[in-house]
Length: 616
Image 1 (cartoon, one colour):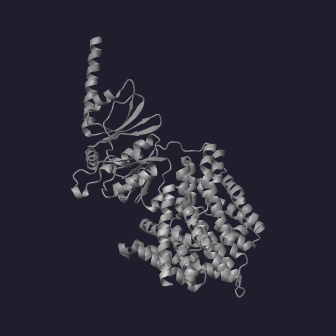
Image 2: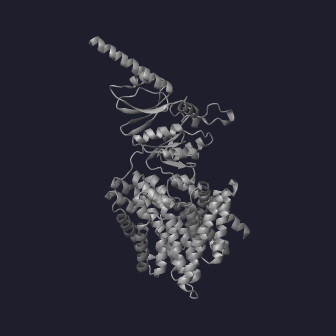
Image 3: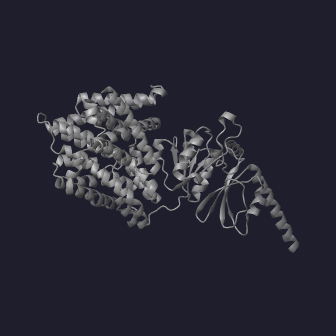
């Protein structure tokens, strides 16, 4: 038995990685290959039977896994940032959540026959969408930037909100199911433990992080260990209160000022990816295929209400008073796939409610999986065609992601943004990010190749990457990562291989594409020019002021960077051909070029005055 458990744990790890890779490669939500894998191994081939293999350990594994998932999601719920993502996002995660919850709960009660309490729990479980299903769908559909931003941030913010709502409803059901307890007293005690202990431990954990009471190498592991310890302690104080405690704990930590939790979030997400993947395969393997079929027309009718009534009603009510057009609202009404969090939390609650003898608890999991399968599969297959029909596609993305927020990058970003070009800066250096924020430039603080960046780095309207950072070891990784996302011809980098020893030389295939602004241009050269007073300037190339006139005025030392033509952004990567008129040239002008321009203007002025005197 020990060898069998070990083999299955190893198999789960390999399959989880394989399914995640397959979803990334096919640009599909990873939930689809994970679901298919679990169904094949479980009900299909009967190879994986989680209950028989893990026995009494299965419930603690799922319980601890869900606790980590909820804590990680709660760390992203910063209330001060919700309003920054627009009125529509704020409405969807507040008013929209209530509308969706009420619609689905009511339909579940009448169509499936659940008691009101269980119907309300089910409604709370399936209000969440989640970035793990939204982000891959947006990458393939590519709607216009405003709609992509709304859907993306709705998925991020509603994840912990929906989970908190589900936990609160479950707490009520768990208390009401015990005839020996007074409902209001027991519920108040449970909420007191969950809210109080969560708030206190979250605050104390924030103090520990803020005062660096844990060494850096123990920071992530320490937070995880403390969180799991608090989860267990809360359950010992009051049964079933642990999930509420860790959710509140994460929310408090996310909203404390002066605390950098970026490393913690990245660590938790790395852990959560594997954890969620393994859990989802286990949960899908436990699914009884006959239970899905037994739902019959009631389940199909509930799916239709979720997709065709609850979501559109929520979007149209939340869209009142916003600038969204009718077609925008129709597109948002169709895209709301349910994710892995709903499956994980529902499975845990179903096991607990079955132990409490709650009627209908056994149907919660197959019903949640039906909603997940229906929304993800149907909307993934049809969202692209629906976007084209409504004419809400983004078209060719002209925006730039710049890795490296140096002085040069910030000045280039400011000029491009003044021309209505979308620009996003990403960097690991907090001082550079802080200066970019002071210039009102959109930024991402962290590694742009991380799982956190996959969910939180706003790639809306971004079509190309410029690698302008001094990090020689990280630059190739960033390039190769975004070549898979944007395409090989959409990634540009500086020649940073100058002076490297043989063991640090990069591959020829990589260096062939690293000639941004010319083969002789390096990060050190750009930094040196900027420190000596170089400026980035925009110049219109016209019939009256040609590119030859530009060279005559600024000399050969002027460095063309980008030019804009017919709404498209073009990047210089090598020898500069003569540019036609009707474009806007953005170039770097060293101090020498500025001096030449002044001398040229002065000579032109003297010549003009001499000609005027001659004519007089």
